[in-house]
Length: 371
Image 1 (cartoon, helix red, strand yellow):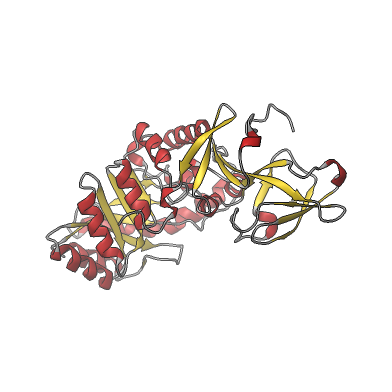
Image 2 (cartoon, rainbow, N blue to C red; image 1 turned 90 degrees about the vertical axis):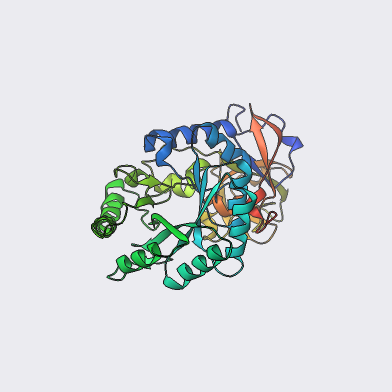
């Protein structure tokens, strides 16, 4: 392994394994790439679900980005802790989560907390909670234009739902949330064509809302895959997330995007159980494992391996040059899916100038921080 490799630590023997490594200089590159693509910080609402670390949010705040998306109440609280101007909880809030949202509003008064609704029951629950506390809640209408995961169907009842929510006295409807993360065609033009076709209904809805006498809605759209498409749409707020750290799944699948890997896993050979086989301490609990075994991690500066099996604490590989590999040998891997990988770690090892210099806490991996 060459000592010139950007990822290799000069003090790697001081780092336990498996470990999550983060490289702030490369995160800074990705922030700048994100700003360059969007054209301005005001067009960005990055999603914090990927990294869940306050330091990464603070890096974006320093770059002028003031609004963010979150998937959990804990991630929203992390945004409040960092002092962001606005955070949209882009998940359907039911049960105790609505009361937790109200508590966030009281605990962090300088941050505007928003939530999604996609049906009248949810709208009424929000209305009742905000009325009980004498507040006016900020909500966005979640629109299902392609993903089929959440959101009001793009049908003849959507405008009526938007109007009904807008009439509720304790709700302020800010606009539309449109997530089309399913468009992941490797070819940019094919991805753009699919996204454009699905978005025609959104533009039609915007016109209907204005013709109904309501204010023109704000629109936040997409994640990382469609970021390079939505940035071309005038007036659309983009909400990429994975691009801050990046992974090899999107790196391979989205060649038009300029982002660089900024998070790796460090692992060691712990056994050579039989001729041709080595075992790494990189099991299910150390790397996202929802994909097939050959799409979980890619090892840097290595090409002589084949995936055999993985269990909770072990990853078994077959290698052609078995004799040269030693127990204790360190390997560096790029996760295929970085978001759930980061969620497996309580802390990340901070790497600067090729040295491990401390840790960043993955605070929002918890379901609850304090609220």
